[in-house]
Length: 307
Image 1: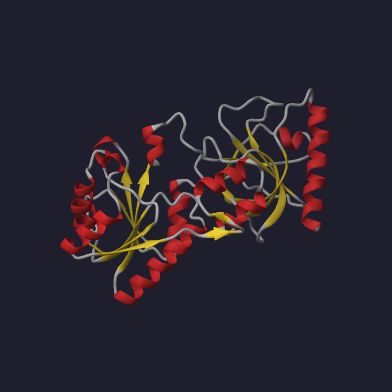
Image 2: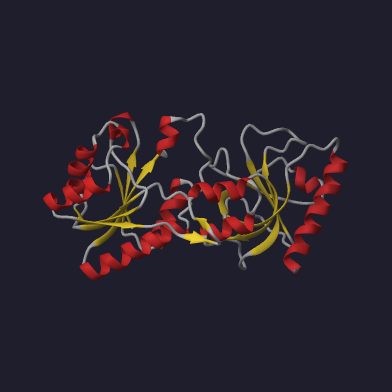
């Protein structure tokens, strides 16, 4: 997959394009991308997406922006898996936010991205003040030579699939609901770094993953499956948080204890799938109480995987 930063380069040929944040690449996104891929193949177009970094809400209201479901790297990896051939990552800044709807159409869609077919969600708005709508796109498409399609939302178990719904499920610890919305269990990726050895001293050695999500969309203790290990995926128990019972951390850490596994993982890049939430992160009066709770958590996670 080609990745362009901004519009300093034009698309190599005419595109079938979709636009969005694609946070989490959930089932709604995947349905749209499936249509994009099929249309591009039948019409000889390049399947492409335009996405933004940072998320527009992080630009306009950084203090209240929602937790991201995926980092930019994770999002691009999943877009590539969905058959996207070109991802244009536009830095969302004051200059871009000030583009009028007409300027956006002329400079971005008809210009740099050579749009022949535009497929958008039914809630898509664009341009300064979000003044651009579907009718304006259709009118502009007639002048600039591109077609516009609009897709409705995807509903799962009576709930409209969205990044906001997936965030709400994760924040509530409803991992099975989140997996239904995302189309797979939620995962965090990270590289294993050296820790302070507390887990090993307590009898539960952990792989400490430095994650880029701050804040992450979930916290607490979970039964997990871990991918990227020698010999294939393994099961375990994980904590996401700031470790209030030890030396409190300035930013969240993902700690994973793998069942029946002993190997040096420093430097490995792992993907941790969150299957079931066991409890919230709490403070313990001493390390003995923490050690006893970790033992109970490990037993609960093993029990979850046995049923």
